Length: 96
Image 1 (cartoon, rainbow, N blue to C red):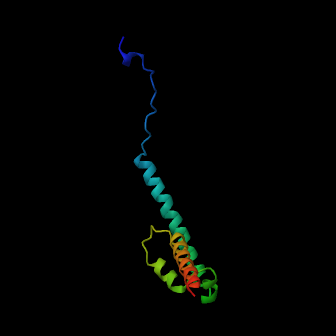
Image 2: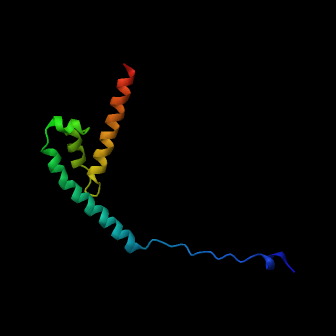
């Protein structure tokens, strides 16, 4: 008897590949979400500079994300900018 004949049989689940249709749908959802969130930039643009600073943004941040490609979600980018600014300000407070 050969050892390979006695080895247990292991069922391997077939790998599920992402279809092109699923990729297109995912991309369209991301684009719609980005465009929807881009509409909220107008609301942020109506805020005063002090109000923007309260949420960790400056007016230049709004301008920066407005000039990004349409498929980029501006709210994600604004969140990153605010977080980076917060980290810089926190580090500056610890220096003094």
